[in-house]
Length: 149
Image (cartoon, rainbow, N blue to C red):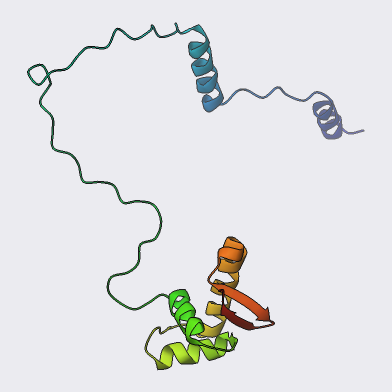
């Protein structure tokens, strides 16, 4: 066995202990501090606030926007909104290609993409998968959709 092979074989037998990273050290210090920190004292008795003793209040900040989508007030509809509108008006199930033709023809939605029918198909399938029976669409057969009643 050569010297090089003997050194690598010996190194492979005795693994080196890994040093803790800076993040691990910081986490250990925080954990130790939390374990030794005194518990907070009970709050003092409530103080009655009267108009004379009340501190001056600052004007309220505007309310934060609620999470979730809000309907658009201007501009064009989204592809899914337009598809839902067209399917609600339709008496028969439509393919996404037919949907796109109607949406573009009525001026509800346009796309700069090369495959708008596939884009709408994908979006409808995602909504059905995410919302289940609460989705606006229902798949009737392969490639055909109708409005979910």
